Length: 187
Image 1 (spheres, one colour):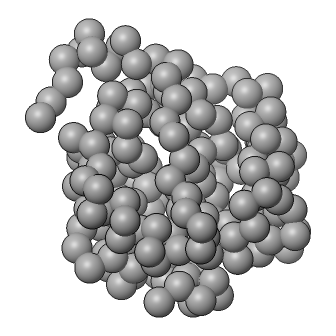
Image 2 (cartoon, one colour):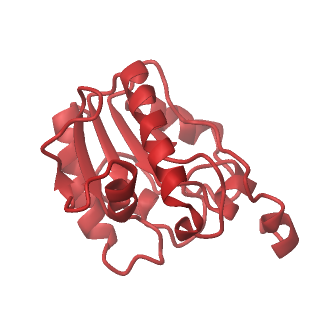
């Protein structure tokens, strides 16, 4: 299934519901939904995104999830049963993350802190170093475990899994995902 340019453009500003369950252990946080993700109503839906291949390589899923046409119920059930959740810093679709303003990212960071305090996962992984730096006023932050937690929760920052990010590979993301999952006691 594909979407026309007009269908994608009509998704600007649309939100995508969080994927979280009762036994949340590991919360992945994207920057914001892309247009394809908003159209499919499934996180990291655009083909070429490294998120699901990295989850699989890390041993966190039993197959590579294909969310390009939306989540299959068995895929959301699988993630939730493992204690894996997904949300965003800003829940407003754009074609590219760099379309977000610093103010939107800072407000999203504030909102995320409250969400994390309410959800209480064991570990949060923010996927986007530059967005993290802006959202949380941490201009010198680097990828990896952060010295400061987020609402009392251990925090890791990893690169954006978008196919546009040349600095991350499926293997490098998988290594970080597995480390975060181990700390979060995700099987």
